[in-house]
Amino acid sequence: MSEPIVLGIETSCDETGIGIVRGTTLLADALASSVDEHARFGGVVPEIASRAHLEAMLPTIDRALAQAQLTLAEIDAIAVTRNPGLIGALLVGVAAAEGLASGLGIQLHHVDHLDAHIAVDVLNNGLLDEPAVALLVSGGHSSLLLVEDITLGAKLMGRSIDDAAGEAYDKVARLLELPFPGGPQIDKAAKTGDALAIKFPRGLTAAHDLVEHKFDFSFSGLKTAVARWVEAQQKAGTAISVSDVAASFQEAVVDVLTQKAISACREAGVGTLLLGGGVAANSRLRALAEQRTAAAGITLRVPPPELCTDNGAMVAALGALRLRAGRPATRGN
Ligand code: KG4
Ligand code: ZN
Image 1 (tube, helix red, strand yellow):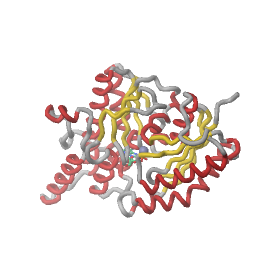
Image 2: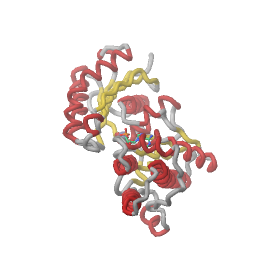
Image 3: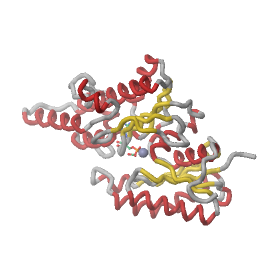
Image 4: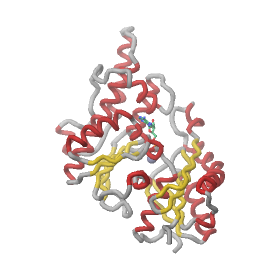
């Protein structure tokens, strides 16, 4: 008998994601984004996101089913992101998932958003060699996690104590008058800039910070340092090289992320590092992570960029792994 088919629903932020997975094979990944509706506010507005999820839910489910050439009756289980995320946005996904699962009389698995970011890697790179360390970096989270068994949930080793990495990218982009979301814009601008042009601070890397915050991140001081630097240049009437600021800022972010990820692997005694989250699409983060993991003898796994950002396939992938491991449904049998 072929493996069960799982439909995954993701609505934790501004993306309505519906994915369909059979075992570890991706069958469909449909996405509706309200990002354009938030652009003029420079960040995600929760109420707008929730309404957009409501409107997009049924059409996106239909698109995913059409992509997979399946009908709802052929779905064996539903998985949905329960946490963390915007509460109103999550509610739309959970309500849809509960309605579908009870209407179809099939299992429902509530899953953690961060665990789903990790599980998605299985779709392109095969089953994860556990234990592993995961570095998840997005607009909402920057975390280092120990993955012993993803079907039971990853364990937090460290996280950002203020801004998430993607949030810092977005805020610095705004400062540089680049459009939202700023991550891809800074990535692009940095390609022609000098990463050594300006020495920006590396948050929580001083010896005294490592005592309490060994695997935690802080990007808000960096963001302020960039703002001060830009202000000072403007006051002095000096022209700013956006590409140099972008490259130097980006280097400060990815330097700390990769340094701490590698030391987390060393401390946990694991040989695999997995990247995930929207910022994992960053070209410099990928390059530096490749260089530093190779030097440390650590295997690096990175999902393709389109699966690093929020999507439904990651939720379906984790649901399918839970079914395969015989984990109980959170609702239904
Ligand atoms: O995972 P994601 O789609 O949504 C959240 O859960 O936040 O991540 C979105 C974040 C945004 O902050 C965006 O600026 C950032 O990921 N991002 C990037 C790149 N592509 C997206 N940051 C740096 N470089 C990129 N290439
Ligand atoms: Zn995410």
